[in-house]
Length: 250
Ligand SMILES: Cc1cc2nc3c(=O)[nH]c(=O)nc-3n(C[C@H](O)[C@H](O)[C@H](O)COP(=O)(O)OP(=O)(O)OC[C@H]3O[C@@H](n4cnc5c(N)ncnc54)[C@H](O)[C@@H]3O)c2cc1C
Image (tube, rainbow, N blue to C red):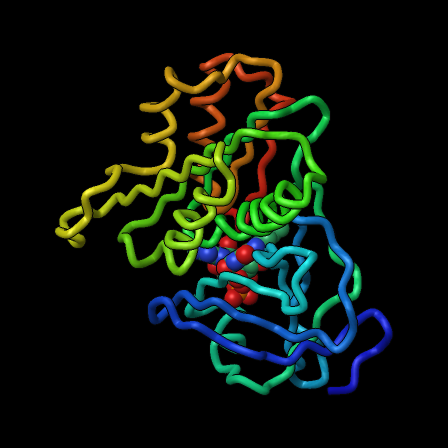
């Protein structure tokens, strides 16, 4: 792969297919990458001499050697069908510069309320993996995290449902709430029912939404972000304390 100096070559080390249209990609970059937990990378493939690129939130921690992403296939999309054609050992481009301001707001904020649809869990995974390492090393002040994670069916929560459940053992003040909206298609499910914003509304009374040390983060589907923002504003969370990362526009 011949790329100019803006790019690093990444090699697909592992791919875990969660469903036909959801996969975890673990990529080994040829050079070390520098980013803050919560930021996104720009991944691309070369087609007809041009790099076709899109933004993807990094799910791995900056402490890890591999970059991890949780990606949904958009069947008629420009890039994702090519990403889903990649096999272990294939290469792709990674922009050297990682970007984004969707990172932990540590300016006196100690309660972090995070809400994600499906792949939107990625930046929260990076933040929490990083926090767990830092907390165990005594490098960070205690913080409280509430993570709401929604999907149509439970298997679309991917490997991250189990990971968040395990992380709860390492991060004592982490509460992970998975929820599914199509319970008729998932009869075994015994957890929360409804969309993320419905669960947020349901839990809003129990959460310290008005407290000045709370920061809220919304990531993924644009409709969830709009609805959840409305719930938070009605609970008197100040707009500047609501951070969002919209993955696409409707
Ligand atoms: C900061 C940021 C971080 C992102 N992180 C992730 C991530 O971690 N994982 C991930 O899967 N995606 C993520 N995305 C979305 C990603 O950048 C692409 O938009 C997506 O993968 C589709 O690319 P495509 O070229 O295949 O489709 P495109 O050709 O770009 O899109 C085709 C059409 O599909 C719509 N569309 C795009 N994505 C979706 C979707 N998921 N569901 C339904 N319709 C859609 C678009 O609005 C467009 O109309 C992120 C986007 C941003 C801005």
